[in-house]
Image 1 (tube, rainbow, N blue to C red):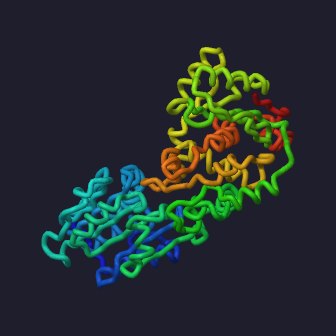
Image 2: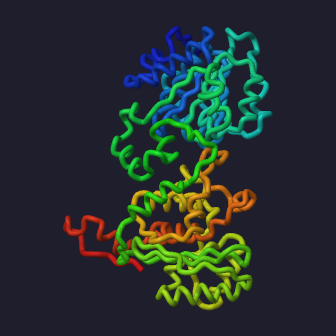
Image 3: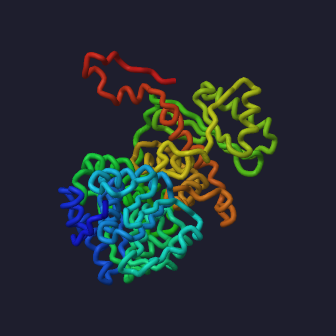
Length: 460
């Protein structure tokens, strides 16, 4: 069955042909901007809050409209993640499959009877993004280029697409790192684009309670809150995870000590290069017990075990950096029959959509807890204060937050943040990572409010 060529605009097509009866104003604006490119309008770039509906309501609708308007047309779709193409966009297209009985819907490809197609792929190879041109002419089989989750796509792919002869172009993503082609479309290259930023409060389906929770969780200045809800890029290429002013303010207003909660210790190992650090958290009270330089790793292991026992800790309450040189000291502690929890900062975060790795999560979560006045740090020595307030955050190439490496800090003449790592490790490790239920958490719950409550549950 041949494709019925539409004369409707993209938003009209979405409403009447696809049955999208509840399009938001911003979705209508974006779809109409896509359609105006047929008549010389500029390419479209949309930076939208997470969960806004940009893929299902804008990208999918634009593809269906384009192939109905130009049944021999070519749609090339890419993303930094194949999962985004396969698990998000193509299912959104298949929702409309029954409306196009002549079209063939494959895993990441769509074909019309007239020879038109939409092809989805993910690549960091610019070569795969080259060579797309009309085979007949621009009015018969024009090319539409779509980059979904554009913040994760390398600049080389954008540049390769610039070599293609395309009539339509659509870039969509949540905001992220403050560089790259997608970022520049809203900044230095803005005069060449029709741009739209979409906040979460423009999307009625996004629960205001989630917005409030994220505001409470991250704070208004956190890059993730700004990206997820305000559709803003982070202006600075690098920003301090916690600035001196904010730490000073937190120290001036820190809470009273409450030591009856969870007890967690963290060991940061140096093997003679920097400082070994042993930090302990009791409830909300966090302190560095000892920071010292020791070249003999066996002696360092003995000292860590000695300090833990002086603090009355079980091995299950102690965490240690098991990356790099640390694993040797941990093995020495094992030989002393003191088997602590291994912490690997380079593994995936418990919030993998937000942080590049676990050490980034530890730093951001700990700094947030300090800023919110939930941690008692006592009086910080100048070196610890400096370490906490000189590490910068960065955006990874896949649009996730990370902290700069220790090697980069050393190259710029800044000390390795061993003390800060130990303090923050003791704040974030424990029940937060192990999933254990602590007395403190149980006391904060609504115990006794139903027939299933049976009093407090103790942690370690």
